Image (tube, rainbow over all chains, first blue to last red):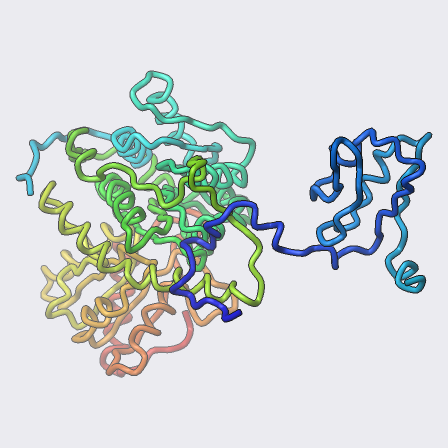
Length: 100
Length: 390
């Protein structure tokens, strides 16, 4: 895509479109990846409530996965997952890439 | 164009003059935090708010960083925003004054000039606003309370002009102007409202039909491109400042330009300054003119954008020039005003220039000091050489 020149940009660095953060993939910033154990997960949705990047994917009230294009690996989901359930573990990306 | 309105003269301090202008502008939002010598200004304006004289939402924040943040937020939401600060307060706003300029929020802020620490000092010098000279704000400097009042009203028009849309600082010398009572002419409320006109927001974040993203991240791909329009807006500002100054003149009888030339036409020696010292310098010129000396004075009213063309023209006939700076730029080749003036003349057939630093931390400057500068210019004019020493 040809990049725009300065005359074509909206005033003040703004983007005349809402919700465009979705187009900006921040998943590569991650050092630790949340790995969810589907068997343990009770779908309490605490991770969905607390995730600052709206990266917990939910359908019909059930957690279906984690959006790794936007998850920055902050680890909040692991912290808020009830300790007795412990369905999410933060695993170092380098360990996972070895496995992959 | 309406003829000159009925003149009303009242006595106000410089701070009161800003508050009076703000009352007449009736801004939508004023986020404020107190700091000497600006405190009385907001104290007075807060009175107008609590008395219901204005419909302004006065937001009392916990710091100047928050004051400027709230100003940017309110401006982005589509409000006409004003505020005021001084010295260390301006320093605490630092991060956000750059954001206000780059997001093109036409905020008008009175800066009651005070020495920036340290050692801590509450009195006048220009180290606060001079430090902010590269932030992307327009800077108007005021000689007295009348100019403070007039500059605040014009700053609203200039900042909001569609060719400009940049924030503007109106600088006034702490205590020397801010706390000194002077008679000044004020306009009627209707005249002011007609002059400033309705606010046309640059941004309107609260319009849910047209959502947009404000203040997003910007990398090597577009950051540079986003700086260019700021540069261009600053380049267009001088014409706007001049035309607003002329229009204001027709309305009030007090016309303003980027600079003010005082007896410079045939002057061989010219002194340059800004702020309250301009009055002292004019009095000194009058005294020396009575003795037959060909001296003149040049006031820089608009420091940002710097009026290069006008300064060149005003100094074209001079044989020696002195520039008085009320702040130090440590390790630089002179004070900030001196460096601007000398750069403006580079490549021209320029007279020798001598820089002076004066009045730091509120130290008095009197006609004798300026007379001394004019005296030293005699030698410089005859030898055609100045020293690098400031």
